[in-house]
Image (tube, rainbow, N blue to C red; front, side, top):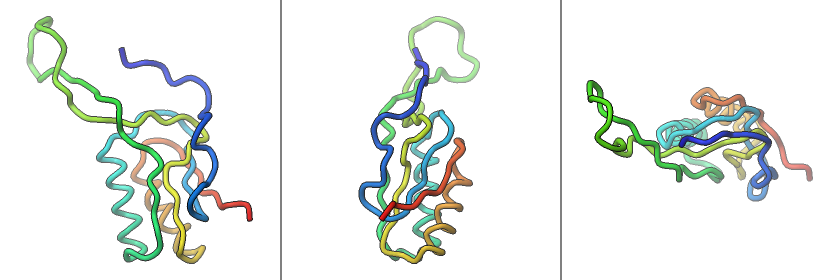
Length: 124
């Protein structure tokens, strides 16, 4: 069964490593490809400056049966891995770059993700 995503995130809701973060405001699945696309857009924009922490990991296997296959004959093969995301979860954190660069890079990463997000700063 695929499961339900009820409630809000209880862990991973505070910025722990960097100064800026990308927080989820929606719920859903982030595939490993989407996480990698967001990571690439951040590192490309910052020109590999600063530090980036990825706070989600795709550890849920999703299966899929091949196209034009008859019903039955067991469960399908693993198609991809996803990370389940609830509202309030920190997805990415950044540090060691200026505020403008961090906000622009996280905005680019948010375009690659299927959930609504919000850019937050550490309360210092």
